[in-house]
Image (cartoon, rainbow, N blue to C red):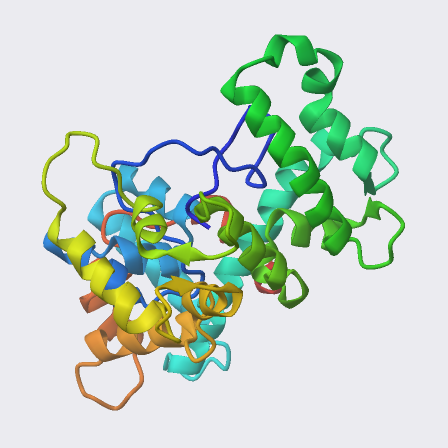
Length: 321
């Protein structure tokens, strides 16, 4: 989720810092790409499509490439997406690729930090190891955090992390294998962790502690009047969204189920929608499939001059993705 950030260098995406945002936050896990795309199109950009097609981190690396280099690498990617090697890219093949890109990011992220937490090198990460690596300095020197925002953040986040860890720890041994630790760091990707994501979202936004999210709390989570000026138009639109679509039972606030409906819409498949969008925008002969030529003709939608670090990735086995 995009609202996750560090409270210290070692505290990865499991920790939230509560500052007052000046820009809009997004909490929806399977959000409609059209909502995000509108902002990008205002800048004549296809950044959302690049991120979905390639992954955010990989997409950043292509800003160093010339258009010719980008198109050359895109052509190689297309060959890999064409799983049945029939010369056509279907919506199903694009959907499969996008999901693979998303999954690859999640597991590569875990691989990068695994050794930071597996202190005894037993290929598991116990709760004690994680707690020591993340909160060790705070626990050893609590006096340095007295009467500070940091102390409040650490005090709040430690039990919250433990609760999440125990939920991810399916066999209850308080030692996470790679799959369990992946669900701990990326709970939005695992069905059994989604109640935790909903609860943490409620806890983040519910400032008065009544167990619900009212309209003002909903808006404050996304926007703060730092300059005291008028609300932007998008904030007014969000107020309407809250009334019309978030507050389903019209009691003026969101409960847990309404929050779940908001951040995890069950009738929306991001990868499927993005794949359909890419096909629709690039399918010149309207046969509902793409040739390599059609993709390269519309290359800037897929990669532009920003694509992915496929210099090394293209040498990987296809199944590794």
